[in-house]
Image (tube, rainbow, N blue to C red; front, side):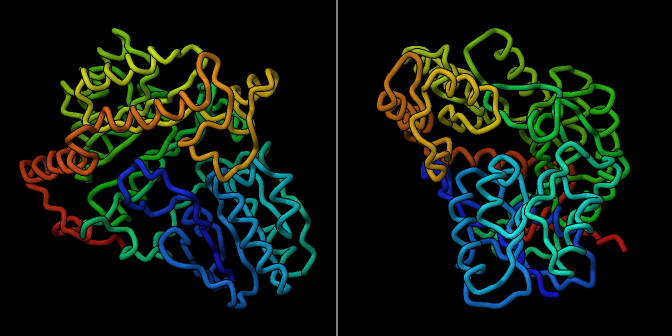
Amino acid sequence: MWMKLIYPKWPKLPEQTEFHLPPHGPINFAANVPPDVELTFHDENRVELDLEDRPDVVALSVMLTCATPRAKEIAAAYRARGIPVIAGGIAVAIHKEEMAAACDAVFLGEVEGHFDEMLDDLRRKQLKKTYDRMSQLPDIAAVKTARRDILDYDLYTYRGVRMVDLVHASRGCRFNCPPCSVAYLGGRCFRPRPVEAVVREVESIDNGRLFFVDNSLAQSKEWELELFRALKPLKRKWISHPIEADDEVLQAAYEAGAWYVYQAITQPSDGIRKRIQMYRDHGIGIEGTIILGADDQTKDDVIRLVEFCLEMDLDMAEFTVMTPFLHTPYRAQVESEGRVLHNNWSDYTTGKVVFQPRHMTPTELQDLYYWAWDRFYGADGRQTKMARLFRKVVLRERAEGVQVLADGTLRGWVKPN
């Protein structure tokens, strides 16, 4: 059986620097496809898609809401020629009814230990419309090392430098932030992978720079310390979402290779000022993630927030518009108040205003979004700031006697058997 795995393209934020990370969802799915299935992978964000070929089955891995319209187009094109289409991923679970109508079958939830049933039904040509495993979370120890062999790394370079590889050390999150759907997808439950499994996966990746895509590493001090101490000998440098604001944890993170963190900044405060300074004191860079248009923000509040980011001299910042994604606490609120403007999912990029803000017009918020990017990056430009952050990691690697080649590999690194 030939299975063609497709990662549908989506509209990028033009304000961001143009680069492409190797996708994470498809390689995790691929780890659960048995070896007797011939699996090929196509990232439509990097290479134009051929819709005239004839695989035995098409599998769509859909991460973002704004990718669902394109996923439906791909499904329609293959199904029109009698080729079955299955789909899974975060966006499929969030838009399950819509995606089920567009595909022959959808898989909802985490795939580990559950995909065999769908595959058996596919082989018997008896696919069910929906395979719902959202309430049956697999044992986290069952998560396998992702199949990065399906990736063409020539497609994931920027100015000749290989992009970071994505890996996760945990799933789930004990928090329930208003714009986030993680609680719906997997419950408010932090599920750390066995540290030895994370180490094995990191060891298997021939890249000196990684991105831990966990929702937040700041979930358990004991686990963080165990993880960081185990990662230290591997000599990788990595990015993550927040780390515990604790001197012992941050020092362990730095020694384990922490390069920079994505830190949410919702308003100027002494607390966030202290946290940013703690990162900096421990040699860890900061990219602020700033949502504009929250219900407690006026136009002046947004301006003060951007100025605060400049005052704190963040290494980088990413500005997004508050977006009422389905199955989030914020969606429930604005929907009940009649403030959702439309459900054109292609515009749900976090770069376009799709709801009525509480304290300004949609146009005012959209203009503030553009202003925030221009104000923060100003004369420096995004590429200049990113180059400075990259230079820091290169200098640190050299000081520690580590050399990372342009293709991402560590000098002297040997792939495990």
